[in-house]
Image (tube, rainbow, N blue to C red; front, side, top):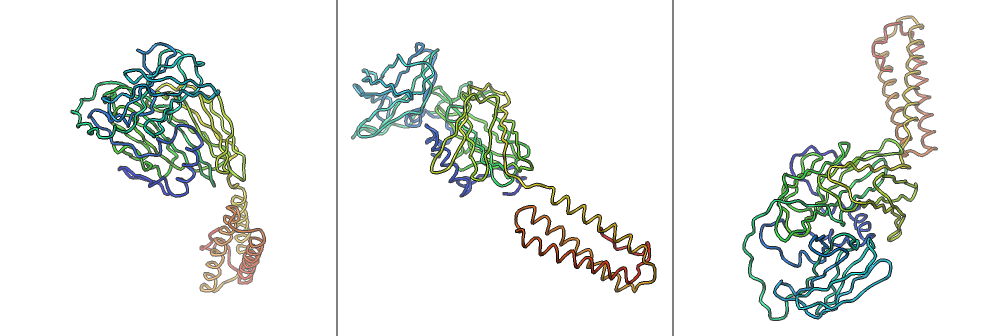
Length: 430
């Protein structure tokens, strides 16, 4: 992927074939990421489609502390699902089932604060499930599970346009940072779920800007990003307004790697409710990840591929997130440096030999020998670079290098025999 100098939006269809397949594996590794793979609806200023808000947990200060309220409806706010069993399942194995009341609400309490939970129900043959979220200690959480309209019910009439109100948005729990090491590069992805927890569109104080690292090359928006997101160089602009629910913006870049370590500094314009980083492990190297913001990390596997999954607490808007990788594969520059030094030494020896030879030399023959010598220098450097990059095996490298050095020695011998006078070798290119 080449460096992009464009000032208009660039999108990777599916994030490129190989990158896309790895991205799907990573997203499938962590719970609650399926929504990130679905193309989101364009931000709009009309009343929200309830199905777009289905399963998205929203903090609510008006709900009592340590309480989760799940509302179940059929396609529209006009059709509450009454007496519908709703199950709240926790990662620690506990669960509770409660039937909805006349307003379609199922209210849950009694779970350990901070434990990850998810709500689910089977409505009219359709299994509805929410994203995972931590059970609250302070304040409450509300969410909806929305099924299809009842049979024979008329589709909801188009809602009147609603003006966006001033407000704020956050990066929801589905937001992820993915680091994918490769051969002398790291592919970096920001998968951002921008959440508006209100029931009307929200307009933040200004445009949201997301900056990818300056060293990134070929920065592009991934397929499925909200159409209002645009790219200029390594900066993504998202002006708003933001519809209720989530707005998806996914951007990727490639950072060249010249050593075994890489540190990325990410500064996001809005608060991140939970830090989540996924790092792909390599088959031929053990990559290590570190971040002062990540309080937990573990190695996981999916479809035969290993990953590091790291999480941390909420990150305030504007705080720099530091992400460090070590143990990255890279090619040493020492062989190339040695080749350059050898070429310089050979050139100096050649100058000395020619300068001390004395005598007249036929101008046409001398220039031909000089041209051959310069060509051989170039071939020698190319051989060293190919060997350093791993594109030339040891046996082939030794054979080609030996032939080139022998040819160079013959050229210098011929120049010495011709007796090039000191200062007369103006074509020297050592």
